[in-house]
Length: 273
Image (tube, rainbow, N blue to C red):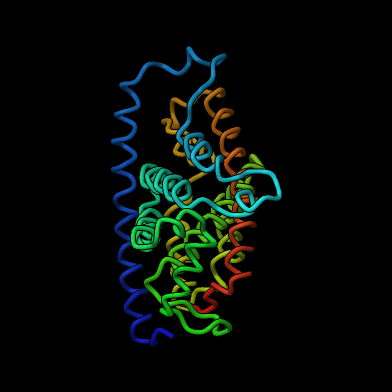
């Protein structure tokens, strides 16, 4: 269990990082806008398929969902998952969620380290990869509800929790065109992440972190689509909403399967950080 002193230092570092992120996001978005202004007009493509950045994320995760009862369908392919998560991490950086992107990058790295050292016949399956890590005896015994950090298991755990948060948040954004995006994000946080955060982190996320990463709905959709809000057409917004719904539809069953695998293997960490 982390000490109070170490947790306090972590919270201070995170707070400073979030404040810096607030200042830098405006600059990044101005640069993004300059780049988008130089592209061909999307207004001419209202009746054609419009590519969005969130659509690329949905495409990356889609192969991980397969229907069926065989072992392959009940498991999760690690190389595909890592590739999809890297696409997601890049998109988070582009839309101004720098803190989320950095955390995701760190957790992806933890999984990559395990993947690269595991035997070839045990690394492509999430179940087998976690079984291999368990066999190394680096984690406390089953039933302890604790995982070693760093480890591949803790990386997979926090990637899953991050995706669960985003799924909950985006579902609320899609359900109501007049939604308060910040309120929706806070509700998603309370359900998916707050149970695993200590008092200080909770106050930082609810007081500073979430407001810093939650613009109004139209601006959020523009960022997710890869467009400039002032120039986004109705067709672009609808394409973004459609692709965001595709992503939620992929993430929902993926998170369910992911959670089932890790809990069945008793590879969860229930501590607060």
